[in-house]
Length: 107
Image (cartoon, rainbow, N blue to C red):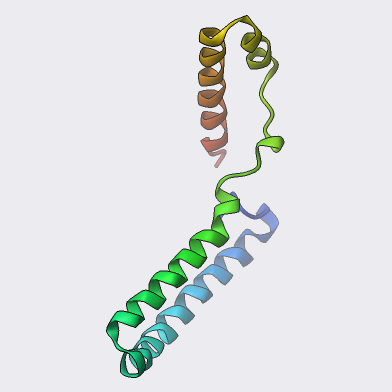
């Protein structure tokens, strides 16, 4: 959650996230019970699968930011001209350094 919102809004985001989970815990079983009676358990699992796929589709853009916002450093650009092996090595080094810096927590 801390990577999705600014620090000023973090407590509000955590509270909203907790509220949505608690509401889902209360309403979800009731809706599932009504749907089980109405359409059968197989269709309830299918509807649940579709809701999970919709949620995955909605959070996917936040998991993989666009490439334009994270350009390659000059080393990787210069190394790509020298040859494939050097270019592949530079890309590997760049990817490993960008992953470690973006995953490092400053807490």
